[in-house]
Image 1 (cartoon, one colour):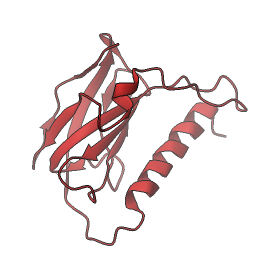
Image 2 (spheres, rainbow, N blue to C red):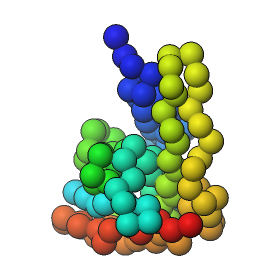
Image 3 (cartoon, one colour):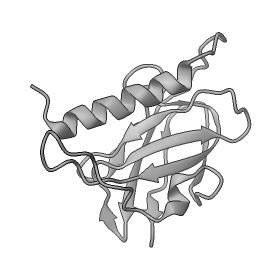
Image 4 (cartoon, rainbow, N blue to C red):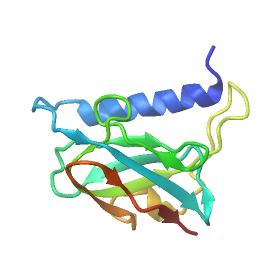
Length: 141
C-alpha cells in the first residue's frame, strides 16, 4: 500500500508528465543525461519538486524531477530519469511538507514564491548534448 508521501509524489509526477505531453504530436527530442543538487539555505532540499521550463521553445517538453534526501535530482522527460532535451531552461522549485496522515493535504509551498514561477525564478540553466552535471542550485530566502 502507498504511503501518503509516495502517493503524493507519484500523483504530482504523473500530472506533470501528462500536462507536458498532452496535445503534442511531434517526435521526441533526444534527452541527455542531467544530474544536479538543490539546497535551501545550505541544506539539502529533500523531496523538492523541480520543473524545467524551456526558454527558447514553449512547445518543448518540460522535464520534472524530485530531489532525494541529499538534494540530488535527475530529471525525467519521457522515461524515468532520462534527462532533458538540449536547450535553455528556467527551473522552478517547490517544497511542501508531506501530509501527516493519509487524509491530509500537503502544505503550501515553503519556499519563496519567486522560485515557483518560470518568469521569476533565478535558476536558469543550459542543457547541452552529452552529460550535464549542473552547478548546485542554491535556494535562498
